[in-house]
Amino acid sequence: KLKEKNIQVHARSIFLQGLLVDKKFHKKKYFRKWNNLFSKWFIYLSNNNITPIQYCLNDLINHDFNQIIIGIKTKDNLKEIVNFKVFKKNLKYMNLENNDLSLIDPRKWKKI
Picture 1 (cartoon, rainbow, N blue to C red):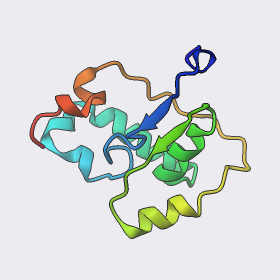
Picture 2: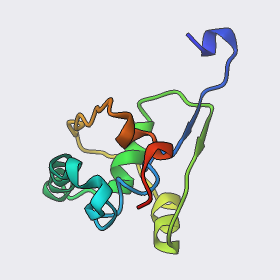
Picture 3: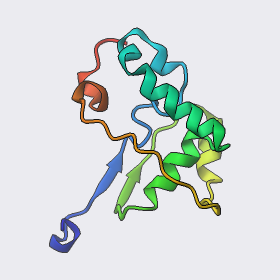
């Protein structure tokens, strides 16, 4: 509906400020209450032989964004993003839907 009104749609923080790609990040005290969710996430990725970056980027192609803003932490992250390829295999996407603003809005995060 936004695009029909000539409104651009941008995606940012697709890795949730690194939370979806760094196993150490979610072990910090603030995120412990969601440990079960993150454990399922990383186990799912491992079982499917997919990196978090590959998963997140593949999920983006299911949406029609005008711009995508991607942050990186290491040059290896950058290499993986630059060399990204769409999955050839049929993969069932994991439902990580969560409406808890204290998790999905980094501005709400306590000092971590």
